[in-house]
Length: 218
Image (cartoon, rainbow, N blue to C red; front, side, top):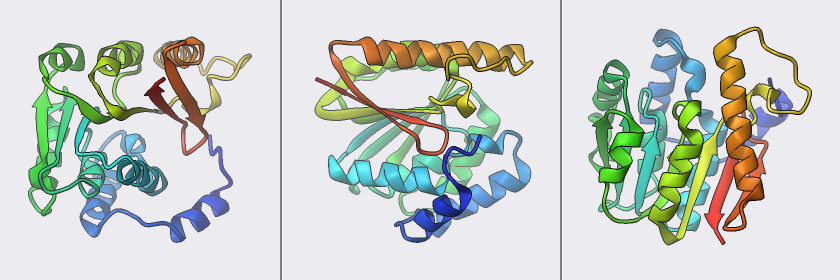
């Protein structure tokens, strides 16, 4: 579902600061060669995240869902040289591909990859995070949120991706015919409702690409 008019989105992209050519190489390779390339965040979302990172002067980031490394590298380009991104994923094949791309960028040294389940890895991480990007398995979205909120720095924020799920989250949306996609719809609705009803969280759901939920502690 194209939420924003395609021509308007392309115009916005043409006027925005965008990720580097190193990130473009990841995007182009992934779209041409990797199954599930639709999971890439894309230029508009990358530019918006970069703006957020600069606005809060983020230095330490946690990413859940590495895929081919595009989002991690785009974020690495917006943090200082002594900044750190920890990115978590269970797919060794795509993570190895990501590492190869990161090695070609001067910003790749800021990225640490952890292979495994986010539910297992998050509790082992020490310290606070200025920014958390959740873009992994939808089943665990709400658990990822609950685990990472206490880890936020005083000015920290969480961004959760794909929270409009192609419009399927809207009340009365028909079944897609895919059991997995329909289950994921319910998981996303669950986390959206949880944020909206929380007395401790301030959330804004943005209709950028497939929906981005911006979350902070009140």
